[in-house]
Structures are given as C-alpha cells and as structure tokens.
Length: 604
Image (cartoon, rainbow, N blue to C red; front, side, top):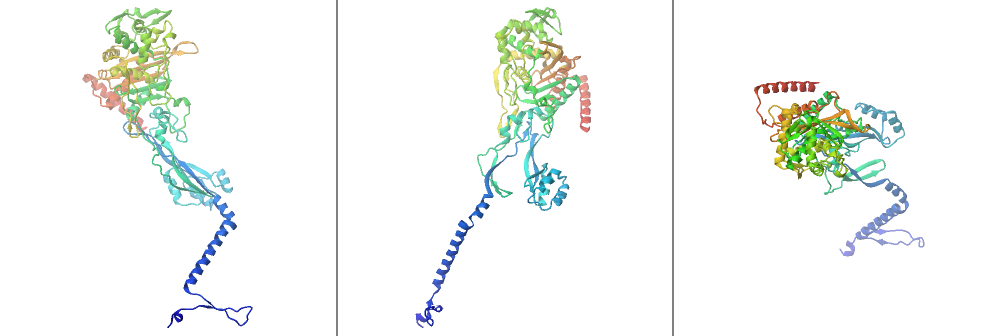
C-alpha cells in the first residue's frame, strides 16, 4: 500500500451557487484540526475579555467598590500587677459584647427566645432597630467567655461577638492607692496603672481587615518581630503586710474618729516600701463616689510635721558637735519668750534637761535652744539634706515636694519654730525616708515601690546622699529609744523588741483665722524596730482625731505598736530583748484575742 493510500482523507462537500453541478473538495489532516481548535479557543477568550472589560465593566466596578481593604489594630492583654511574692493585685480578663446584624437575622422571635435562656433580653430600642434592618445593633456587654462560646456554638444567623479586656482587682480595696485604676479604655489613670501604663499595655497588634458588604472578615495578624509586648509589674509591697497595715489603720481611724489616716512600712536598708495605706480608700472595681478618695495622701498631702521633725535638729547639732546627748540645756521651766512669741512645752516643764531628755520629753523650748545654737543657714542645709522640700522620686504619680521657704524669707522667729515642725510642710513619704536614713546609719535612700518590670529588676539600693555619720545616727537612735522607754512614746512599746521612735502632735494651721487651730490636730508616730538593728521603719498619721483625745501618745503610738508587732511576727524577725514569763502569757492572750476577732470577721 502506498503512502498516498495510507493517508486518511476527510472530505467536505458543498454545492457552488455559481456552478450547479460542480463539487469542491477540501482535505484536512489531524494536525490541522488541533490548530483550528486552539484558534477557536483563543477567539472565545478574546470575546470574554471584551465582555468583561467593556460590556460588563460597570458591574465589576460596583462589586469591587464593596470590598474595602484596610489595616486595623487590636490591644494586647494588659500586664498584671503583682506584689513582691507574685500575688496578683490587678489583672485583665477577656469579656465579650454581643451584637446583631438585622440584615442577616432570619427569625427575630426565635433568636430572642434563645438569648433569653442566657439572660440576654431585647429592649424596645433593640426591636425597633431590628425592624429598621440595621447592620450593627449592640445588645449586651461584659459577657463571660464561657457564655459567649455557648452562644456562638449555636450558630445563630445575624449574631456576632466582639471581645475586649476588662481590668479586675481581685483584692478590691487592698493597696488601692498604690495600684490605682484604669478607665473604660484600659488606660491607667492613677497609681502604678498610670505610672507604668506603657509597660503594662505594650503596643497594639496590627492586622488586615477586609470588609465585603456588611460582613467583616479578618486575616491573620501582620508579623512584627519588634512589637513591644505587655509586661507584668511586680511591686515591693507585701500583700500580707499591706493587709495588716490597712486593718490596724482602719480600726484606729474608727476609734479616734479621725478625718483621714496614713501609714507606711519601709525597709530602711534598701528603701523598699513594704506597705502603704491612705484612708479613706476605694474599690477600683467600682465607680468612685468622691474624687478625693482617689488621692494617695501618703505622697500628695503636705502638712506641718510637728514633733516628729525634731530628729532633724537633733541630728544636725550632734553632727556639728555643738552638743552631746548628756549636755544640759536651760529649758526655763517650759516657757521661753523669743522674737515676741512665747514658746511653751506641753509635757515636761523642767528647768534643765539633757539633750536626750529634750527629745524624750518632746520639749519645744529645748529644741528651740538647740536650733538657735545651730543657726539658720546650717539648719536649712540639714533640712534639705534629709530630703525635705524635694520629691523623693518614688515611682508613683502625684507626689508633692512639700514647702520650705528660703532662709532670706524667714522671720526672726522662724528658726526656733521650724525646729519643732512648724512653718514648713512635708509629705508622709519624706518623713519615713528621713527616719530610714537614721535607721540605716545615715544614708538617705530613694524609696522604691517597683521591684521589677517584666524581666528587668529594679529592686536595687539607690543612695541619694549621706546625711549624717554612723556615729551621729546611732546617737539619734539612742535618744529615740528613750522616747519609747521613758518618754512620750511609751505606748509604742513591744514585748521582746527594742523600739525607737518619736511622737508628733501638731496643731493644724487655719487659713481663714490665719492662726493655729485649737481644735484640729495631726497626731503621728514614726519609729523603727528592732531599734538596735532596724529592719522596719513605720509611720502612722491621723488627721483631725477626736478633739477630746488628740495626743499622738494615745492616738498614733498604739497603732504603730499593733502594726509593728504583727509585722515582726509575720516576717519572723527574732526578738532582741528578753521577755519575762509574765510578758509571754500576756502576749499569748492578746494574740488569741486578736485571732478570734479576725476569725469572726472572716466568717461574717
């Protein structure tokens, strides 16, 4: 068979219009058919593109306009605030808000019935918006994650959930002024929440958002290796010590009928604030009834310190070697006229007192005589060296620096008056820091409230300056011990422990009368335990106690003793003095009584 015969032919017949009987023949092989098919396909694609680009362009453009692509941000979970041992004081929990897209809602009545089973109800305004086919209708906020999950599992058309974080304070009022609080947007507004707002928040996470019509679809988060994550903030305070401090201070406030109260516990050897309380306080989980309750008066209120300030003049004259503790001073039987003013003693009214006895008996006359010997310039210098009239630098917002006039603005009577704590204003944190300087041997330290942020440790000792020598600090402690043993601070005694401290009963200045009040006082006690090797410095202040009983010896000193005793027991700091069998039995009875009282409170 020839190649011609092997070749398969395909014939196409049609009749010519011109020549009736003539037949025209076309012959195609397999390759020709494939090429023809591709040609026809190409023509179809061209036709489709022509349709899309020209004829149907308006419809595609309309659909494309319904697709919106943009970048959205989302907050990260805010960091926790912890006490020094890791107990949570502030945390964030995820909550959900339910909304309805009425355009996607199939059966409003059925949907309402299902939601009623979760205690979620439609209000009249919701029903009206559903009738209007609104695409976003907020129904309920602060839904727990468990409930939100159960609702979403039912896959109800038109139901949507949005998540957000809500700040929670599990200890409620405890350490409220230190921790502070956040606003509705989780922005810190007070305390550590405000001071460490950026560290607690971190940076917002970026993500892509696509909106097609009324439906939102979110893509994965955009990867950002440099994004700052939220950090936990660990404080120097101890939750249990804070509880002891607040409980004793609260009882003292009620008993003395005081207007306000403040107490601070500081470790004098490293500056750590172990507890700090201001009363009245507030619950950061709830709306605050009075704006003044938000104020941390331990760092923001300034008042005349009264006799607790006498340690400054004592330290100054001892450091300058102008006096010894055993030197006698003419105290003129408790009445001394100077610069047209009579300075009086409220306690001992002796003719002569040693320098130690001047502090022990809190003699205003004796203190004034010490100041006159020291002089204005030197006294002003020591006041500043001890940290007064400048902020301590504690990591809290709203700290005041106090008020001390420059020497050129002092009157002739200012020097003796300042020596016993008038004509200047100080904060509680400044006072406790000054006493800590005496307790640790003469070094003024910056008070710390933050132990760590994330993995960065902050619990270091930050010495500001040396204010007096170790020898001078030891002599001041000796004088303060005699205050508790034999002087105005006897009610601050603690069995088994040496205590050094100073009482302060200060008349409040009445701005309207332009004179010192005879009704309103500040009662305070600041002390250190154990006095021989102090580990705690504690300050207690009551503002405007009952005018019938306003002396610090009966108002502040006993509360100091209660706080100190419980703190020493909790921290397991061993006694440094011998205890008689009688004292042991008395102490045990008092402890049992306290524990029963606490147990009844917890049961209630």
